[in-house]
Image (cartoon, rainbow over all chains, first blue to last red; front, side, top):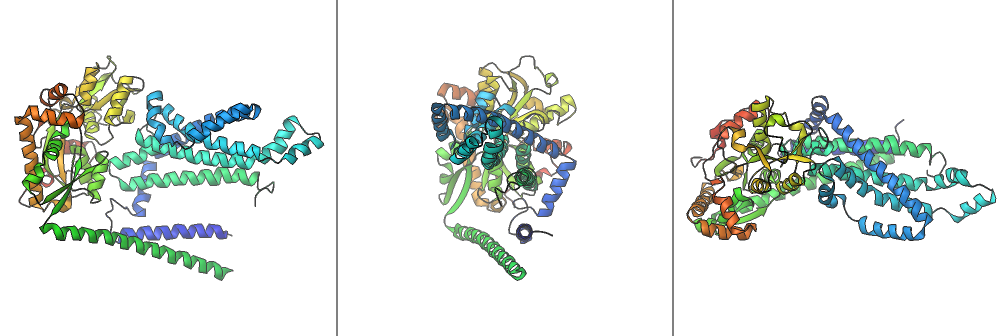
Length: 257
Length: 331
């Protein structure tokens, strides 16, 4: 049976579609400004079969994963050091305060000079977009572990790896997940905007390039198609990865409803 | 329970309808405001023109700085609009934010292909474009290998189409280099080419092409070689709604004609005027403007060749007759 929340989501989608189709057929806007849902659907099908859209989606995701991976490594290192040495922690906090508000896309021109106009500049922007929120989330996670856990561990003589694996990790996991979620979302945004500024990375470029190319050739349906793919990938990652992890861990452990 | 569910759904639907209604009335407002400006057109008319910099656009700057349009028609008020790039200018014309914009012929044709009823009313300039390289081993397109990256403003730009034309002639495939393009604004392209790390070639136009030459970059192919003859680099385009307004278009057209004449008759004054606007030193600017192959003329050349090539290379799906593209007073 379909759940009520799902039913509501479907309803919202249907309303959006009706509105969109209605606006299209009202003739108020030229199809160059607002194409019909059908035109967009056709463009998606065409791009998957005739163009390299699948490859572009794939390349985009690979780049983000690279960025996320580097960011996770950097953040783990920084966390370890700042938990170990208080001064480092204060230093990293200052860095966070300075750089967290800086949009990745604003740094891009500088990164272009430093790293050139290839994948490395885009990865650098993604790393920048991801590390600060990830660090802040994880740090606040660690700091929110109740003191009593530590005392219980001592009382039951639990330490070392067991303590980390069975007490601390589950306690911090919600923060890890929300950090990764934010990181993923920001990395995704950084990638698309970076690609729209300097086109193809590697061979045929990624999704941002797909949208940009459709813009310069005035294919509005193609631009909408790009957006829908971006939304689609976001949904798949959310439902297929984050929610699955959540249901296998936090939900199973009864930490969230 | 189910009843309640249905009720919330109906609420959602109603909300959607309200939003829809608001959108429709908003766009109705927009159309109303346009009607007003047309009504007032007996007295003072407003024409929105894109302000563009770059040597190839020099007559526009001269016309703007010396108020030539106002002298042609005191009742015509010009609103100068600053926009980022060709795509933005085209979108502004499409969405009625702009009446007159200047661009290369290929981006204009892409607009026609997609259903924009706009026309060219004038040519503006011919310019020595070129594909510049920082690698001395590249002397022709045949020396380019797939790892070389080529920077240009964007796919579909005149630089891209010229590269495709050359690729067609020398490699037999117009899209031979399409997978190694990097889309960069001209100044970024210069920087990247000179840095020499990622970008090997840059298809660009004056003054960037001159700057790169001064820095020892070598020309792989010139725009004219790629095209196979002389062609108009920048043309002036009119939004559909202004096509029938002969008076306005003629005023702008005459002002432009005067600007070009002024530039040809008064090089000293032109250089003084433009060096301030562009921030380029006078003697250098004089060489750029008068001694490096830039030519200002209202004649439109090469339109048909562009159409034919773009149809052949499938950038356009159907051929377009040249006379439907050019604005004429008879309409």
